[in-house]
Image (tube, rainbow, N blue to C red):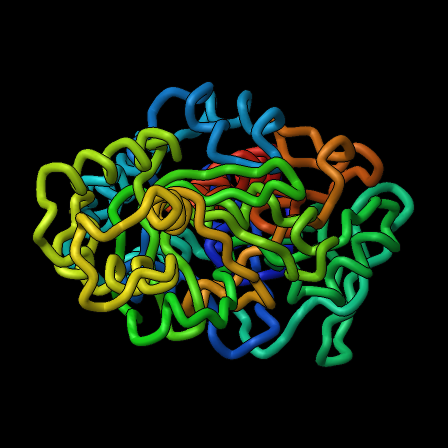
Length: 409
């Protein structure tokens, strides 16, 4: 095989996976990762609370792409070439066993992201990949006849036949500016997967409380999601909120993260049904106190807050509740409105939508359609998934396809 010189800008999940794939597919290739920071694979280390949510047990590409607010159509063919089952097999072949949790997420059996980092670094190192930290790609100019003249942040220059950008999402502004200079259109990056700031007495002193199945919606942008909901010190989080933030990333950015959130703490139970159940509870338990007897199996502390917000006196009994108060309780439980005043990142993780316009990339090879020899993988593309390992799977898949394409002589 020929001996292509391959430079990979970015030492994250996609960059390392592409590098290892390329070097294993073509041992003659010279592959070097340039990582601007001193900590390669930093995002892998903090993901999943330090356990690394590697992927998700969804093995049908048409179902898998439904988890991507942006990029699903383009990833359909890519996932037919490399999907979660292939990811599991790849890690197993290198001594790392993954386990499936009840919600479908894959984690290493060690419950430590260090296991994944060690595996990626070992695979790259064994294949002969060189890794240079504290040094990034500052500039790249196409060379007549093919390849690139690359200027590093250290001031050095070097050449390569193929150049892969795997620099991540919105924090890599310099890399996106360089990609734009090379002829690509950049979709403006905005945050995805974030939690909501809500300052409301109904949530005070409830941090850590969760409801297993709630429906959250933003009528202003016709957005609705369902799933577990978590009360935090600053507002609301949990899978329902994170999914809502992913699908509504651009629209919520357009609202400056200031909007009204509707919460049905009962899941998809309609308001009228909730009102009827409350009326039945009043008839069946007329002498019980409203605040202490909860007909919906909601967390007791939450129930007390919602009942108080409806205007029910702390010692009121069910028989004293008027139809008007009953309707007010139902509204709090099944159609509560909360004013959102801002956002926070999901823990220390940072996911963006935006990046390289997808129509300008060949998803069979991840090569640029406008600049031969230029490749992309991971979040530098305008791809993002909901929480649950889907963003890493996109990184493994695009990294794999780019690595194989760059290895060809």
